[in-house]
Image (cartoon, rainbow, N blue to C red; front, side, top):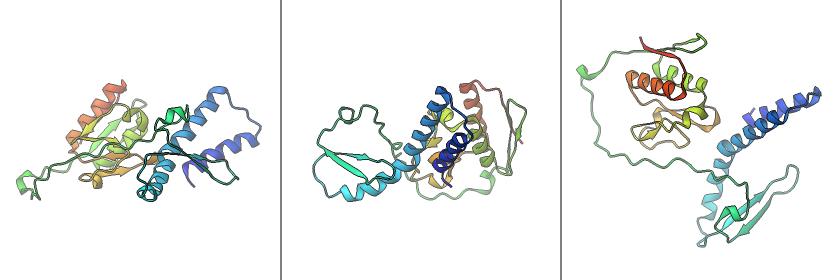
Length: 213
């Protein structure tokens, strides 16, 4: 079941129980719905539409009018400013592609390979997070703190956003996919991961203890 289906199911359950939502709760649900559509559905639509439009040589704007249970309506406009067409439209922008310089394959020397280390993070409520791999602890802690909150900090490593919506050409294999269509970059040493988590904690003013074990 998709995240959007789960959201609607939760809303239907509340309605069937006769529970009324406050104005604030309704706003939160609308915001959650919009975020899921923006991050999970619109990028897929874009990937499918772009190849078909590549043969068009003039600028245009397509407006898709979707009403559940009715045929899809697509309108065309020559206006380039989307704000003139839809006042509440939100543009979905992928993170820019990072240009990496290639130095060719390098083989690590035996003496350069650091011993395996782990991360142990004690959260403000006393919960201890310590997985078998430092990267798994790193990802879990960020998810607990909130992807959106950490994303807003704009932190990068090797020029790549720690939380991105674009898979990097060079470090893509080290980007772990999480809910919401986000990718968390784990291409860093355990020591660097500790520094990143300490930086995140300071920026968000969260008291958590990060240790290398």
